[in-house]
Image (cartoon, rainbow, N blue to C red; front, side):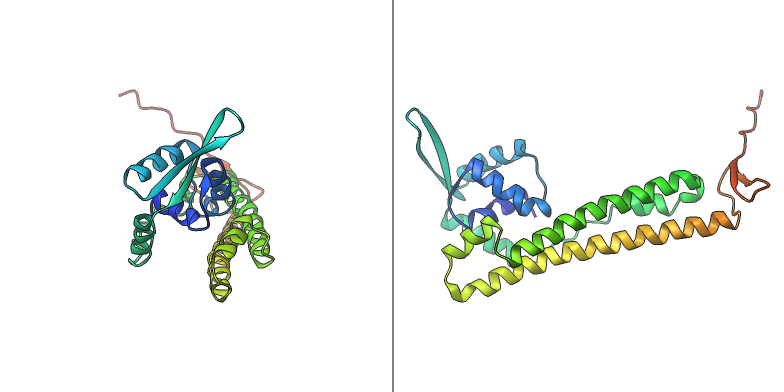
Length: 220
């Protein structure tokens, strides 16, 4: 997926100014495909050059103007072509799993900090995704309401169902990550309670791990 396809997807709802496009993007697609605003306007210019969108300049007040972006037939064809292709999967690059696989070179305190941060991140994300699911179910999402107004009522069920399917998937992913972090924290507790040393640590007399001093550097 590219930013271009994400923007085309937003514009299928209705023509909109760059300001409104950013607002709708941040309120929907950005939950799954984040992009800084500094990248969006240049991409819209490139999309205009490629005739994926057309722009109408309309007055804004007495002296200013605003650009309204509309999806062209070419843009819709590009989106449909992208949707018709199997999604490519990028190679896995998960720093959290790589770190966890080598916690023995860390310390119990540092490993706990990592997993607590992971747990907190996905707990916050889960709240946002569950809120989005609730808002979609209640038709409180402005972009969804706009999209429904543009399409025949017979299509509404599918439109809402696909949005819910996507965001429920994000919520399920967050729950999995939260459970994984909790499992890791329990594992750390178990190992430390049994005085299992990590790299460079040895159990002290109370059964807790303490750092072992580094050996002096060799003079030769």
